[in-house]
Length: 453
Image 1 (tube, rainbow, N blue to C red):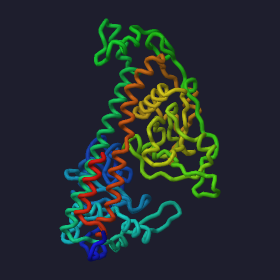
Image 2: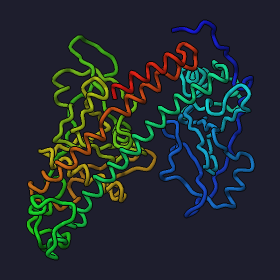
Image 3: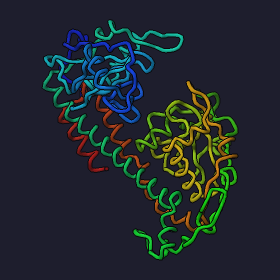
Image 4: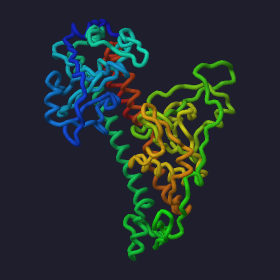
């Protein structure tokens, strides 16, 4: 339903939103201390402190003289990923890195809780595209131009209600992500216990029954060790290279951006960044559609016998993903893999799940970087990885026992509840801000959505 009266468009400056620029220097890193927020920490509208640079208190005080972030401030990227943003949460003391600016409202025309949503809608991105300066290496926004961005500003009482609704949805998405992280940690802890530390074998060697394990599963493990080239390993388990367990497949054209003949069919092309989002968030951001020939589609589709691994990219390189998730349900289209992803054919789901967890363990310990070349654009040397990485592979019965447990975790990880809520939030955002959709209608839509989850 359209609003009876259009809400006014005003510039950020007219609406009492000021821009505060960062200090254009980088402080020295410290072992611990205050977080120094840079572009990689801005993810999905939030600040992710994983891997953040830390600075000393002396440097924190120096770097926050000009700009000391406060709760509900919005960080905006002005160079590289221009226009991306993240909100400062309550209680976070941090300094802001180069190529970032902060937007802060005086609260008179723009509610502090609403500011984060104001800079995420289609109107915001229209203004980014209008003012962006296209460079040879990076696009950028000028600090002096951002305050002139013109956006629809709802009445402030409406802003408060809109923020409450969108914030509640965002909190639920965050909770699902935290649940996914817990599930991921459980799967990895079990893998490490069984296949790295060999806890069940050690326990049986001492004449005890492994805790948390039924008798049938415990019986699958040996009760002694034998010498190998990797040291002591469970009796009867084999030491093999990855190349003896799985093979890399790329092969064939993987599609084009545009449709050139009627025989082509659309598919979603998974890239390295999609693998990262699926693994960390339980869903992927919008991935590109490729037009693919039916024969190539069959060749490129992902199966549960396979593991995908991101082969390039500063963030996702080396991140694996088991191919057995119901990814088509996330997109509504068949899923294929791109040339920026290598496919490891493991021959069976149980071996694929084992290899996926093994690669996740290697990434967590940073061992995977022994097989990655390049600095600005890291690339995985899959030939070196398969030829030289040696692993302890258990018998098929143990692999299948692990598969039964891990599969249930994976299917929960790759469910589409977070995607559904994210789509709902992102659909409601522009309609609420523009006044095309009013709050009673939203509440009815949310009740319907709640009943389907």
